[in-house]
Length: 103
Image (cartoon, rainbow, N blue to C red):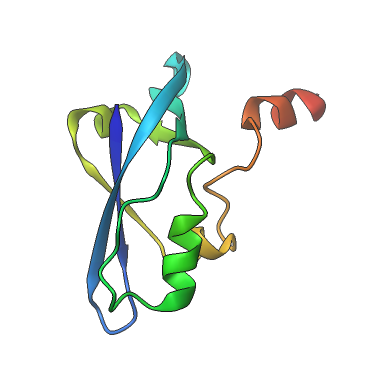
């Protein structure tokens, strides 16, 4: 599958990035999919700020829950803070493991 993310950049420009992804599991009670992003990251416009470019280039291999609509080509609008980690959205490890460790 592929999944598209959209971010509003400083200055109100918008950035859409589409990744190939491996479907790992479906969570029926929340109607969402756990996927793992495949790489390499798509080429970006050279005008994208270097810190944002680097964060996007680091996304392949990350785990993420996406709503079912993402499978139908919907671009998921995200806050820029998801790239810095200030808002936890992408996970370096399988997030199901972290949840079972908390119980």
